[in-house]
Length: 175
Length: 144
Image 1 (cartoon, rainbow over the protein chains, first blue to last red):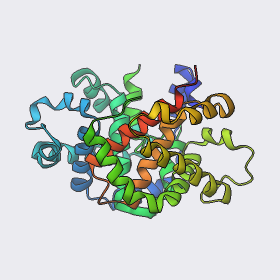
Image 2 (image 1 turned 180 degrees about the horizontal axis):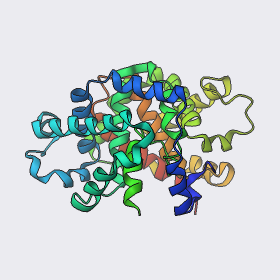
Image 3 (image 1 turned 135 degrees about the vertical axis):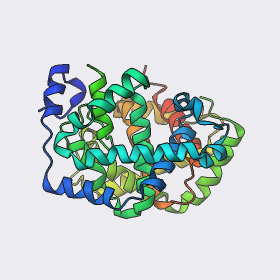
Image 4 (image 1 turned 180 degrees about the vertical axis):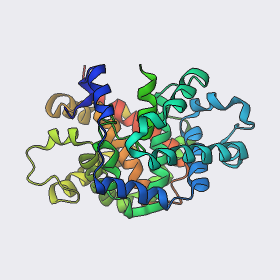
């Protein structure tokens, strides 16, 4: 498997995604991090940060109420609830690490066919999640831990997508 | 390259005063993470003996990079003109693919979240993200 995934053909990416093999260390890093996360806190912070830092992502939340400014977003209960929901969705992948593609099949169709979310947005949310987790863990969020998703074959774009599960969700969409 | 509103510039400059004393460490950590998490970036540093996180060449270069960022903060009102020389350096001598500026910027933001968990609020994050984006575009000006 070539590392520089940017140049992979679609059928190669497909093959790579099916070939996810986690080392024991990667499994334990991921389960440890998620095991110690407060999903409500981290979820709401990550989603509200995404809506503030990348305001165009608000397009998907028109029915969520007041998003007029950063304060409104940070205190919006619908956003907080949805952030928690997203983290629980990620939890499903953590509990099914050897079968992420199948685990996310339905969610992928939902995001693509019903919600019409541009897959680029998953990377934006993933970046915000990385930053929120980094702020929580401090220097314990080492470069080695930050690098874990990149080593996974499912991360066909070759980019850091923490958590990489978002990558698989968008991958399904590109078919 | 014009960057942001007056408020954005205020936020960046204010945060920079907090960041400045730790700039060298932030630079070293950001660079370490970039090399570890995005191994394709190592191709630009094949001439270094040691590319591991926190190594001597990484620390030294992190300091150089943050010196450039400091310079940019001082020239925030006209980044294109201010970063002309650096742009020429990156375009003609270093020939760094500009996609990598985004990668390094991301890692700088991750380190800021670690070092300043309370001060690196979403409002500061967006201003800095915009600033680093404008800085990157100014650096890429001379490429073609």
